[in-house]
Amino acid sequence: MRGFIGFIVMIQGAAGFIGQTFFDHAWGLLPHWFELPSIAYVGLFGVGAALAVWGDMDKKRRQKRAESGAA
Figure 1: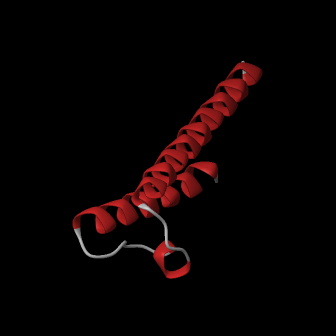
Figure 2 (figure 1 turned 120 degrees about the vertical axis):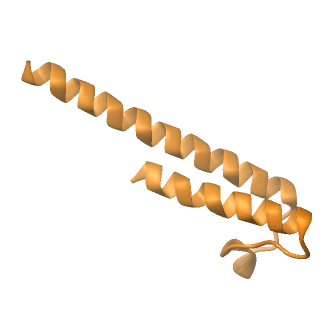
């Protein structure tokens, strides 16, 4: 679940940064509720990437533990 949420946050961060930097307004859902600076969207992308990596590492750790327990 962390990986999925991280992926969504990464998309929102990237869309907000690209839209605000290269076009006239930020894209995505967040600009409907919040007015954030461009650096905040970069931070959201980083947080989303960290969540996605954390979720993937946890999933691999659980698979490895299950394999070693079954053997």
